[in-house]
Image 1 (cartoon, helix red, strand yellow):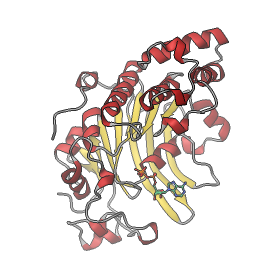
Image 2 (cartoon, rainbow, N blue to C red; image 1 turned 90 degrees about the vertical axis):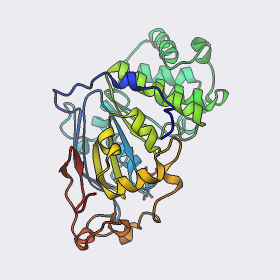
Image 3 (tube, rainbow, N blue to C red; image 1 turned 30 degrees about the horizontal axis):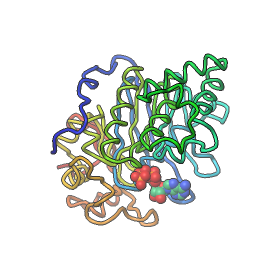
Image 4 (cartoon, rainbow, N blue to C red; image 1 turned 60 degrees about the vertical axis):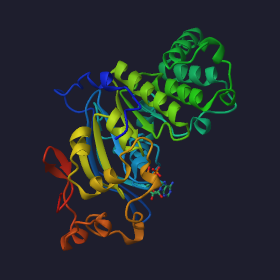
Length: 334
Ligand SMILES: Nc1ncnc2c1ncn2[C@@H]1O[C@H](COP(=O)(O)OP(=O)(O)OP(=O)(O)O)[C@@H](O)[C@H]1O
């Protein structure tokens, strides 16, 4: 593997708090769009202060998990089943819009892929940030302005007071993404989703933004779920990893445990193809593409491409079970 692009180990040396119930406990999350089962029984837990990477090829369902857990997929778009306990909220899946409105932006926040599209081009950076602070935290105008300046400074924006008057198009892509991180962190969320937060940026800026998100979430004791294409980046910046294939969890656990010695044939294949900084899983899908949702096997969805598939694999779904220090869904692990 290449020399680390990010120097984030000191941040990771801060141990996550493990002796309390997980912040997020998702069991059997299943999402169907019409007859297409996009997520198929996804289960995961996330501790307080932990950082989790969701990885997998394009179309694996990474963003769908993040959007579903942010309440951004409406009942008309898809049906969602399963359970997702978040801190003292018994089930995110069962929340109504009022319940979501109380959580989203405050206790759950998201940094989207492309700040250029996520920020409103018609309002200044300051107006957008101040509006969040006033609406969500009930701050007065002056207090919100002062807080907005502090937030912009904390995400590395110089001349923050002046930048409040800038429109998004007057800022570089990296600066726009910093503004979006500031907006996402404005209410000190317990959990931040970062959905490929750097895919629209060049490589040097990517490292800065990932470091910034890690630094800021760690400083606040918040947890973070990164949606990433880059397996090497995941291994450097996240405590835990979840490998997804066509909406099913293949393998999950401590990042080093999983990536140093993958036991699922899919994780092994991914690692052999892409474990190099900047090498995106999307670029070179191993052994052809993900099967169409109309032709998914009833069992393990990776069975059609798996070099170790047994006759039972396509027919019978392996349970996600504890195996060699990680969670694994495979009838024939390596
Ligand atoms: N709005 C939508 N309507 C219909 N299908 C959708 C929609 N959004 C996503 N999908 C489908 O859901 C599946 C999962 O998509 P998703 O974007 O979650 O995958 P991903 O792993 O995040 O991929 P990428 O890395 O390319 O963003 C894909 O097959 C995609 O085509």
